[in-house]
Image (cartoon, rainbow, N blue to C red; front, side, top):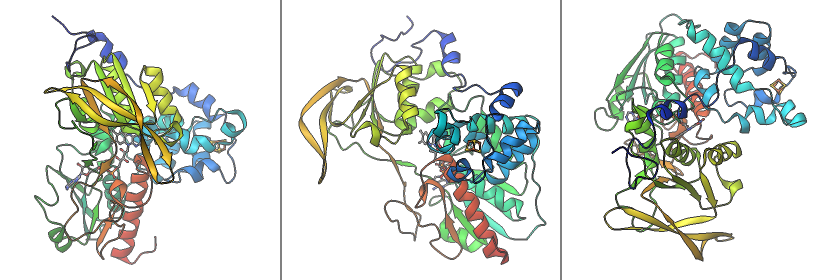
Length: 442
Ligand SMILES: Cc1cc2nc3c(=O)[nH]c(=O)nc-3n(C[C@H](O)[C@H](O)[C@H](O)COP(=O)(O)OP(=O)(O)OC[C@H]3O[C@@H](n4cnc5c(N)ncnc54)[C@H](O)[C@@H]3O)c2cc1C
Ligand code: SF4
């Protein structure tokens, strides 16, 4: 007998086969040529454009939109990619509603911004569809750089270094390159294997060797990399997950949201991914929203996100929260888990309401219980093991902890944990490494 939304427990194939393709289709369909022209014509091509200042990679947004408006999307793509080599992925995943589009003068005046993200996607997709790589390498410098981690920060760093003529080796512990672009980003934001296609396209620059299945601290030591290479960049992300610190956390059915998302991302056939009937997600960021929305899209009957503080404190943007609720996810604010109850498996979660006080968050005596056969922990990621010889401050690595060593992306101090920030930090570290290796300015 096949499963349905009402089947108890954590089971696959809750939906008719045809529903999966529809549910996991492109969240925001691409603009066609005419739509892109119309969207580009809304731009005022502002002087001192606020959208450009809000972009962590400082893309010249009015310039690339003008290039689209004048019918030269390939030139627009080059404008974007010269600042952000993962402009294709960022066009799909950037929370533009809290970055460039939030400050767009048309958003401020009319509540309807220029669709910068979708225009960026139009330009980069147009160029990438031709298989064209728009950059070439400078003359070989004879310098060798090791990059650890093939996520957005590591790949952006590797690409910029390769462009400058250095030889780069990227060490990645997972079987595939891409970092969270490949294993984390919601399936409906990056469809048709885009993460892998973008990596292949990026590597066309040449001069980059990617070694997968190699873990720093196990297969290779930081001291050896520092001895063997002229410089080392660490872009190892945050591979650990914070504990719930509630009783019953070890019960079967209590899982890390990032592992569930990675499993879904890698599943060829989505109907094989098991999901609960009553899913409770604990957390307030993009990971919580993505786990919840995708549980719903897999056919869970009831999905609830519970966040310990108020709506405005949630790190998932208002747009993302709305997307979750429109998909049928319920969000409860101001409550924290006290206990996961059940026999061998999770059956329910007890919550206490919370109150912000000058001494921090207080648990109140009042509370409620939610039925749950699957509980996702989405309360933040942490560094999984500090590379030998390094010290962390507030859970992050310093940017330049030793003479030949740089760090960037989620694992490093400063900046928001976003794809676009990771790209900016990898690129900027590459510029610093290049300057250190060659004595060149910038
Ligand atoms: C579920 C989820 C959804 C997200 N959605 C969005 C979104 O929609 N938009 C957005 O802007 N941001 C999103 N983010 C954040 C974004 O994915 C990250 O900020 C970004 O990927 C950070 O890039 P990074 O290169 O620093 O790290 P990562 O992408 O984590 O890459 C680090 C790489 O290093 C490798 N590595 C780790 N340790 C070692 C080691 N010891 N040896 C060798 N290799 C190692 C890892 O396997 C990984 O490939 C999301 C994050 C999560 C978890
Ligand atoms: S702020 Fe808006 S209108 Fe002005 S340049 Fe940027 S996208 Fe165009």
